[in-house]
Structures are given as structure tokens and as C-alpha cells.
Length: 279
Image 1 (cartoon, rainbow, N blue to C red):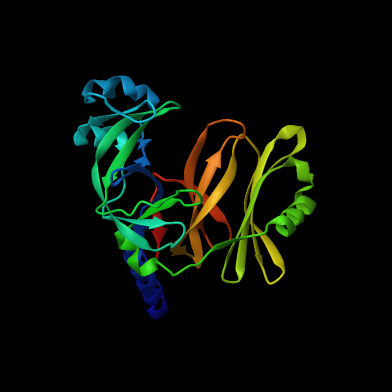
Image 2: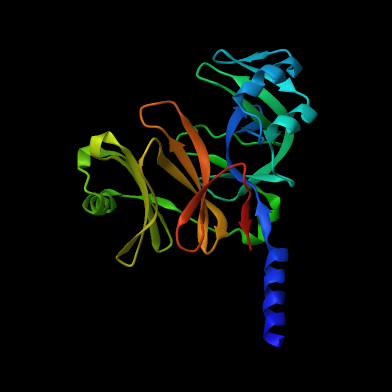
């Protein structure tokens, strides 16, 4: 009986201490503003635009033949998933440390030359815009993640040897490789490789290498889409960094973001509508 009570107490404590943390990639608009692409709430989809359009404000033209139209917050909450319930902290992929706080400004309908999307817009005070955005990405993590953030210093390393290992394992030729990148953090290297398989099927794998041992942590084989790229974050789950994964369909403009969370055995990909649960 005593042991049973202890087990119940431990489980209850774990549940109480679990945190739902929001994490996503963000894009810079300029003028101290960032934005996030939104997903529809359950029960709604792109067909809902016709109903939403009546509530949109007048278009404000910005550069490159793009426009922005605001919408009321109550309409935005009805149609779109906005799961964060605390301040969002801004990070960049170079320092991987907090560089500011994002303040929610509202939801807008953003139209550019390629596509139209609903976005959440955030203001930030005194953002120091870099001279070049090349090789630099930005992401946000909700402020309730404080106790789960680590100091990380990931660096890109030569991926040739890791790609050769994957070629041997999955049997594709070098010319069938689409994209390969390897990132080292402490004594662990993660390699993300996408490649064409038989009949030009799309494939991608994430491999961990440490102390001469290679382990496949997740794979998407013979599917329509692939994992294109990854961003390390200082948020840890089961002793491994949460990853922001760039997804896409080869040879198209169809791309999106998912979150890679380690479950103790493999990295599971989840939509950014879901919160990352850490203990």
C-alpha cells in the first residue's frame, strides 16, 4: 500500500510540474515587427476565408507588391489556433539566447507575390536589425520555459562522412542526395539528409552520431514531403534539444514548419499548433 501511494504521488507531481511551452520560427517584417504563420482551428480551413474576408480592414500596401489587412481579435480567436498564454521571447540561431520580448499586436491577412497567409504580428522594442540576415533565423519560445532552457553552442560541420554513412545504409547514390547538413553540439552531431529513392520517391532521415556510433532518430521514407532543414533550440526535452524542422515538398514552393521533440527513443514531429510538453 505504501509503495502504491509513493507511485501515485510521483505521477501526480510529474503531471503538476509538466509545462506546455510554445515554440515556433518567426519572420521579420521590419520596423520592429515579427510574425508567425497561423493554422486554422479544428473545423475550419482555407474555405473559411470567404467568411473572414468581410471582417478584414483596408489593405495597407508594403514593399514588393505585398499588402496587410488587420482583423478583429475575436474573429481571429474563433478561426485560428494561437496557443501561447505567456510572453514570447525572441531568439536567433546564432547566439541561441534571448534577445527581446515579442508583444502580440494582432492578426492580419498577409498577401505577397507568392502566397497569402494569416499571420500573428508581434512588436518588439529596439530590435537591432543585422546588416545581413544570411544564415540567421529567428524563433520564439514562451517565457514559461525558463527552467528548461540550456546554454548551447551548435556549429555546422562538414557532412560528407555522415552522408556517406547514410548512402551505405539507405542505398542511394551521391547524385540522388537533395540536401545534407550536419550540426555539432557538444559531443553529439545531428545530420539531416534528404534524398531521392527508387522511382524518385522523397526521403529524409535524421541521424545522431556520437563516439563513433550512428543512430537514426527519425525518418520519412517514400512520402510526398521531406525534412529540409533544422534549427537547434536551447529548450530541452528528454535530454535532447527541441528542433524546429523546416518541411517541404521538393521542387515546389510548398513549405512549412514542424517541431521535433525527442520522446526518449526518436524525434517525433508535431504541428506548431501543439504545445511542447516538458517536465
